[in-house]
Amino acid sequence: MPGNQPDDTTDEDATELKFPKEFEQADTLLTSEVYLLLEHRRQQSEQKEEIDEMSDVFVKTLNYTRRMARFKNRETIRAVRTLLATKPLHKFEVAQIANLCPETSEEAKALIPSLENKMEDDELDEVLKDLHSKKTFQ
Image 1 (tube, rainbow, N blue to C red):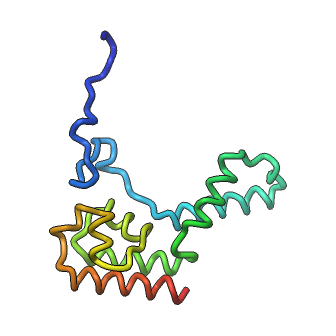
Image 2: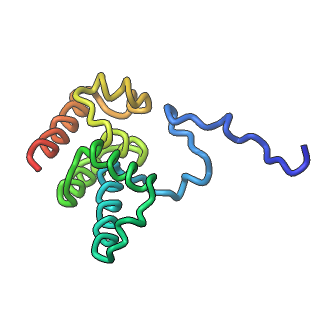
């Protein structure tokens, strides 16, 4: 059909870290970071007395990220990012590990198949243990 773009989605596969070109320069956000951004926006709206103007989608997204955020403050998020930045991980893997907070290397590799050959189980277990300690002591 004229005007249709070729289907480039056949090469996309998150399990193999294959993403569309548009994602090459994009940064990933943790659910916790999205929550902080939305909460900040909510507070700004509240101060300007625009709270009634927030869309239903905004409120639902804010509530979802509040429930799903594993880390509740900037310092903890920064510490999590610093911890994961020292490891040989793709930005997608960093976000997935921080968002999912798997308990064990086995669980992490089941949820994020691209981790399979990235780290030894002992090293990944240690990272996950450190991650959980940050979640616990915030």
